[in-house]
Amino acid sequence: MILDDDLRDRAFRIKLLLMDCDGVLTDGRLYFGPSGEELRVFHARDGQGIVDWHAAGFQSGIISGRNSAIVEMRAKQLGITYIKQGRKDKSTALDEIIAESRIPADQIAFVGDDTPDIQVFERVAFAVAVADAHDLAKSAAHYTTEHSGGHGAVREVTDMLLAASVDQ
Image (tube, rainbow, N blue to C red; front, side, top):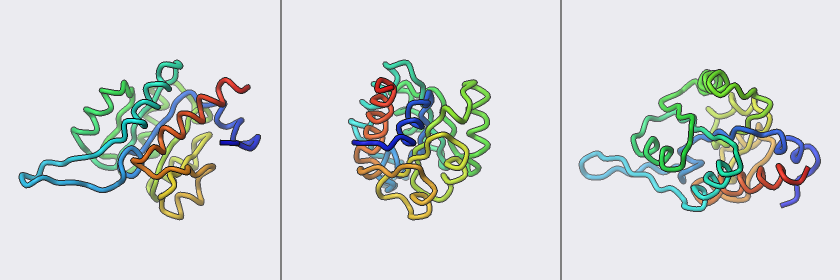
């Protein structure tokens, strides 16, 4: 993928990758079993991208509007440091992560897919909407992925960020 100078500069500065979960790490659909158990499907390539991101010395986190034990489990499997669930006010969750990580907003990327993510998009250095995001989220983002949420969009972003970190 070829990035213009502005996107390359934004990507180069990133030290912390934050993501929504539903619609970004998953395809956004919610599955419930007969006993009410919640199921989610995660893409292995997205997981590998996050592992590669961490191996390069960077950090990651999730800011989600819903609570899910499955998300907590997957985040721990991948070594995701910051997990903020059940957060309708994602901007406040961002403030908490900035305080905990001591990484300023101008070194943070956020990947989202819907209107609640716009409040974070407006504050970070690199706002990314997945290909199948709501139109308002796409309009607020600096970049829109070629891949849909839950289908490799996060891997696309980590590959882009890692490439930018060595290109400069």
